[in-house]
Each structure stands twice: as C-alpha cells, then as structure tokens.
Image (tube, rainbow, N blue to C red; front, side, top):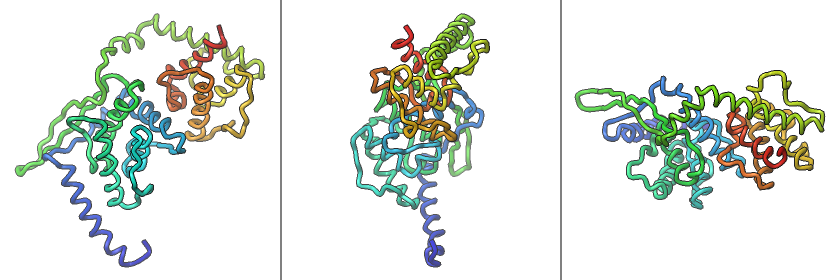
Length: 322
C-alpha cells in the first residue's frame, strides 16, 4: 500500500472486479432488497440477532471466533470456512485471512461450492457476489439452510417473512415490484405464539414460574450473602439478572459445591464478549454435569431472552429445588 505503483493499479483492478460482481448481482435481470419496515420485524430480529448469531458463536467458541453481525462478518469467507470445517469436516487449503477482494471472492467460491454440495437445495437463494457484498437477504437464506441441514434441533422462529423490493433490469428500463419472501417455514404454531402473548392465564403462569425460580435462586444464593432482587418487587427483570453470566456461574458453583476460579470468568464483565464468555462457560458446566438445556444458546441468555434464561434455571431447579 505504500508503493506508488500499487496505488495507481488498484482503481483499475477494483473497477474490473466491480463490473464482474455487478453482472453477477443482476443475473437474470433482477436484484432484491429487503424493505426497511421488514427490518423492524421482531421475528426477523430474533432470527438474525439471537438464533443465527448465537448459533455461529456457540459453534465456533472453541476456536475463539466471535461474530458481531451476520451482515458484516461473513463476507470474506473466514467464518463460513470454519463452519464448513466444524459441521462437514471439510478443511480446504485456503489462506486463513483473505485481505483483498479478489482473494475473498476466490475463498467464497471454494467454500460455497462445498456447502452447496451438502445443503442439496434445488434453487439456492445466495451466490458468491451477494455474500461478498454483504447482502442480508442472501446471507440469511444461507445461514437458515446451514442450521436446518447441520443442526436441525436448533429451534428457528416460525414463519419469518420479509417484504422485498424486486428490481428488474431490461433494455426498456428498470421495473420494480414488492414481493413476500419466506425465510423460515411455518410450523403451524403461530396461533399458540399469539396465545402465549395475549392469554392472561399464560401470563399469570409465566409470572408464577419466574417467582418460583427467583425464590429458588435467592434461597440458594443466601448462602453466600447474595440476593438477586427484592421479592416484593415484580420479577419481570429476572432474565436481566443473569445476562452477564456472573450470578449464573456463582449459582452453579453454590449448588454443585465447587469453586469456579475467578481467572476463568469475568467477575465484572463490561463488554458483549465478556458476557458471552461467562454464559458459554456456564452452559458448558451444565453440560458437563449432565444437565442438558435443549436449544438454548449462550447468546439467548446474553440477549435477555426470557424463555432461554428460564430453561437454564429450571434445569438447575429440577435437580436441586425439588
């Protein structure tokens, strides 16, 4: 980058790459973009920020890879290559860090070729140029297909749809249309989801479960002089108390009768990575103890997902609170 010759050559090189990528993007004369209103859908947010992001980070935690964004962190092929190795056992002879656009595209081509063989989808909704351009729609389709193929036990939000603007390029100009695109299949439980939200009895039961869990936690933690929250207050923030993993780790140690060295976790976590590390450690300890917490990812607890947090606490309650 310091040499003058390199500086002069780069614009021409990049222009050629952009022309190639644009031609691929407009393949069949169409380009799709998610409408802004769809990006605000809570179900899409849960799919993207909790389930898929959590799945990636949980899958690659042993390799100390932390992904912050599904849009920004998958374009160069590194994460996808590690996921391919993790779930398909395929280790391609590729440079670990592809720093130039051409190297990234070559890496993506190799990785996606191997992934496509294993995903076995007739009509793929992603391609190299779209992933490299950080196209959210294509990236989500790819990740959903990977989760469904490699870890079908991971519970994806049901019936996630987005409105997309389809731009069609022809000799006469550009035409646009709005279509609905399905990201996850309808499992037929939407009515139950609505019921869970609106039924007063369901809400009351949820409150009682939270209160039971809070009583159990406070009784246990009293042994070390800690209390999660005042029992006279509402307990809707129970999930917040555990999102950094600290109290959860202390609770596990207290119940199981062992000390977790302070060097193994962050006692005062001040970043997402620290909280994710703490919760991941807690879930690993639970697994080692034989307490299986089905479909709960570390990201669920960190993001204060109520259902995920309660599943973790209930696993401990079943063993120690009966």
